Image (cartoon, rainbow, N blue to C red; front, side, top):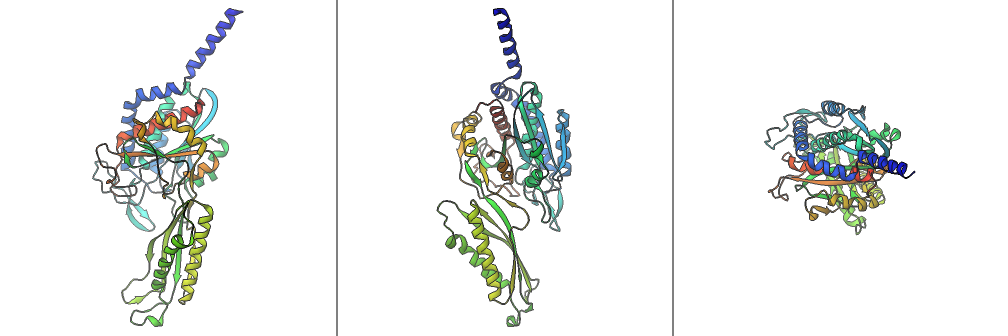
Length: 436
């Protein structure tokens, strides 16, 4: 009887050793980091050189699909137009972790001078534009491709499963189209296989290897808006004969600046109203009959969002009517993004895990709220989510003086991608093996 019990215990221990543990993966990713970083760098530079705009990431999707299939993964493609997912199942049932990377680039002419700089061009809003990964989505994709390769090699020691999400149109689909995280969820990626938790990251200009986070509201809700002001065309020498929509638009801009400063209690949460473009007229001596204004609203609180939209609508319509014109207010104009909220309990639990990823304790930083927006927020509405920021400024450079995201001069240090891969590995295995 004692001998039989001994055999059972030995068999159980042997099975557990085959499955591995979080420690196995943490140690293994360190051992493989140098060779893996070379591949991640190669993928990142290829993707950087061949960027594609939102909802047009056809070649990008094929490139990723080929890689994932080479790992033996079953890949589901054509989600939200060009998105794809793959699920890696471990050798034992357990939780599911979702990891997300975004795929789209921006209508920006690259000016970095890098040997792999983009020379791509495309059409955006009817205009011929340059295309550049000016927000680092090339880095996000390459990191996740590396994570998929790493876990695929050690699938036999994994419990639970991992969903790899490669998402199009994070920057927003063209007006009139659906896209991004919202459409991926609408098409059911969480219905068939709902993860227990979702993680995402974003590169930014901070010291190489720094990980920044914040619990609760982390990134703002963003609503694009459009206002069409109708007036009456007249000769520039006789403005009294018409209704000047340019003058109306200038009054509206001035009044919008009072919404946050005079109408909102911003002691706890900030808000931003931005006018990004005003278009009207074609000649210096013609008062046009129409002006189109566009911009964004950034908020962290739904009630403040409602108040701002109400005030903007009232100001635009009443100002136009007071001057003999009219205003059509469209809010949101196209896609809008909810607040990106990091689950407070999950955030607290992952911090000890991330402390093991960074080189120094001070490299794990609780950051301020960002007024940028992310459609990762849609995933985090469905399951607990944690979204963090990865510093990618080359070592030795002053990160406070380098170009930021969306700049034609934005540069990612490939060395920093190693920290991104390790962060995803640590977060994933820690959760799957229930170590936090």
